[in-house]
Image (cartoon, rainbow, N blue to C red; front, side):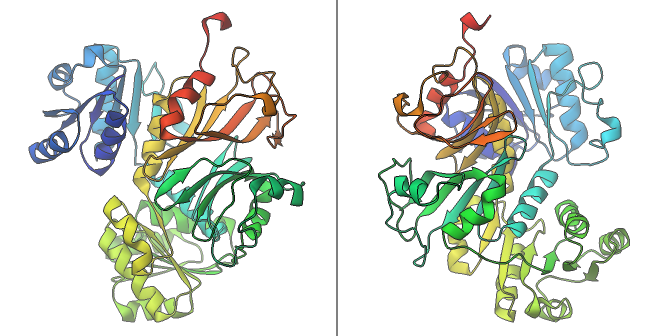
Amino acid sequence: MKIIICGAGQVGFGIAERLSQEYNDVSVIDTSASLITAITELLDVRGYVGHGAHPDVLAKAGADQADMIIAVTLHDEINMVACQVAHSLFNVPTKIARIRSQSYLHSHYSDLFSRDHMPIDVTISPEVEVGKMVLRRISFPGATDIVRFADEKIAMLAVECNDDCPVLNTPLMQLSQLFPDLNATVTGIYRNEEVIIPHSTDQVVAGDLVYVVCEQEHIRRTLALFGHEEQEARRIVIAGGGNIGFFVAKSIEELQPKTRLKMIEFDREKAIAVSDALHHGIVLQGSALDQNIMIQADVPDAHLMVALTNNDQTNILASVIAKQLGCKSNLALLNNPSFHDVTKSLGIDAYINPRAVTISRVLQHVRKGRIRSVYAVQKGAAEVIEAEALTTSPLVGTPFRDLDLPEGIRIGAVYRGDTTLRPTGDLKIKPHDRVILFAAASAVRHVEQLFRVSIQYF
């Protein structure tokens, strides 16, 4: 595909990196010459210095032949106009824009981004997506990652297997026999910095990060199976009152009214605004790196510190200080991927990668076939994919035990109607079933073929 990306910042760079690795024809536009120089030196992409919404710049980038434009600059209005120009002047088929202001996304104005008005096919709101991920991690502290599929009826959990994990050295096929009523399937294992697509005879060992697809109602049982029965935090301190911090705080008040919530925000005006908007949460104005402020916020007695400022270093240090003061656990927002590999050594229990959320949303629309949702794990080494089976799919009508799946693919669940089905040997996929599977990066192209619309379909 020929793809134009407007914005060469962290998000734009991450998207360009992933798409260029998959041999797409990628062009990147940014007003910063230094960012364009950096991205063209490090990636196999073309770079153009200029304004992403200007017709002449889009023309130079080859918009007349582009299959997709992805506008992820820091400014909503530039992203929207870039998509409008790409549509009106160059007839670009697919237009994706990052929209940060919630004013544009209010349900009252849901038809704003329609073909007759502002022709944007996909809007991505990282703040909301990341905020939802933070809330899921708060609700299920035993999981290091959790994403929902199939109208939120199915979840993918990433679970660490510690030395006390009850199912260590147990063949995966025995888990089904031991827990026949537990709708959960191990679909991937991350071991020694390598993603493994397991077979039914494989076992998990201490130190593994296991990816499990399970029914929504079985999340807590699944976590307990792997030795994680951590209690949900009831005393939470949030560092950072920006869009994400405010979204999380407001949602906690609505969804978990018994939770004691405090927030630390450096900017005085923002602290006052957030304080006025919250009903019960207490907002302290000051630095999240100030131990006196931390103590005033009752961090030593908190169950969880959630660091959500727009500065990675602040989030790291705030998380570390909180643990030193006695906070039981921490969760940090980290944009820079270079920090991800050192979180454990720094004493950070878990982190959220906002770039991964945005990149996953983009991949959903780059993938061919009836792909409904995509979530990339381990820096793109594998993907969790939800896809719809069509009548012409080679998966339809054949019992699972007889399926000749390509190497690198493991099916985790099938969603039919409003029922979640476990992939047993007798199960047959029917047309319009939604299949949730785990695929190594090298097998993604096979997934696209399995769920691609055949000419016979028409």
